[in-house]
Amino acid sequence: MRTKLSPQERQLIKLIDQMPLSAENKQTFSDRLANDGFSEAFGEELRQKLLEDTQDQDNLIRSAHVTKLNNTIQRIRLTRQTGGFRKHGG
Image (cartoon, rainbow, N blue to C red):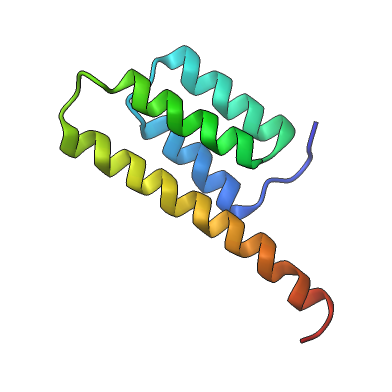
């Protein structure tokens, strides 16, 4: 089990709680993120689940959630990529 989540991972957990998913799916994804951290496979699985579970909802609502998820995933990627620059002082 991980001891510390990044600010972006904490934000992703909050976003998962707002998504129109079942309570069971929300809990499963939140627990996995807290225990294992973020990975590309996790992000893709979450995006697919969101698209599957919201097919019968309004496209505008669905698009808003997918956009928020994609933006958060991009922030996590950027933070990871730029993390090496701070370590090397340049």
